[in-house]
Image 1 (cartoon, rainbow, N blue to C red):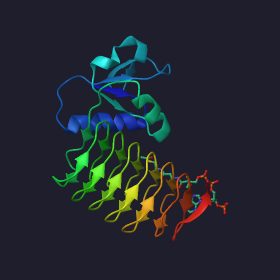
Image 2 (image 1 turned 135 degrees about the horizontal axis):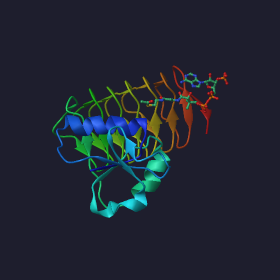
Image 3 (image 1 turned 90 degrees about the vertical axis):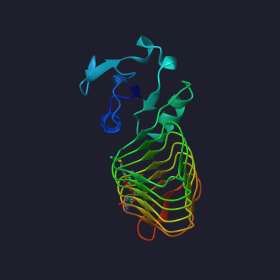
Length: 196
Ligand SMILES: CC(=O)SCCNC(=O)CCNC(=O)[C@H](O)C(C)(C)COP(=O)(O)OP(=O)(O)OC[C@H]1O[C@@H](n2cnc3c(N)ncnc32)[C@H](O)[C@@H]1OP(=O)(O)O
């Protein structure tokens, strides 16, 4: 198993994989020169290992960089912390990471390479497109749609039925009560657009 990205996020993914009880060795890969060990594991450059032969999780928090790397390799694993509570009707696609104490309720769909960070709550019938990041303690009520590579900030709340576009950002602690257009940054309570 390979974690692509010798980063803080990569360390958390390492711990999640261990919580799943995986016995195989975990190897870190990073493009930057960061030595040959990371978080107690071997650290290599991408060209030093045949990445096509391994299952990978991309340990990079930036949604656009994660997207760019995801097209390079054929197979990705899932990392789902043992403490998360996930309805059996939930769909989670390859490369996604579900951290500790996350709840995901009925009929929600999670795209590829999403990050559901520590203790976030995703309620019923939500749809998260690929490369979305829901930060720690953020909450989505029922029937919320989140577009590709959007970032929901730490502790933000989104009320039921809201549509958030792609490549958007919801600021930390914001309360979203209206739809958010593609590419917009919204902050505050109620959340208002500060950038498009
Ligand atoms: C495990 C992990 O670490 S996961 C990572 C979790 N991290 C996050 O959730 C970070 C989320 N990021 C934010 O909230 C950021 O503040 C952003 C992306 C919304 C805005 O960042 P920037 O584009 O750099 O905006 P900037 O800091 O210049 O602020 C612009 C204005 O918005 C205000 N603002 C920024 N963020 C917020 C916020 N969350 N709530 C309310 N107001 C805010 C600023 O005070 C500023 O107001 P002013 O013009 O009146 O002074």
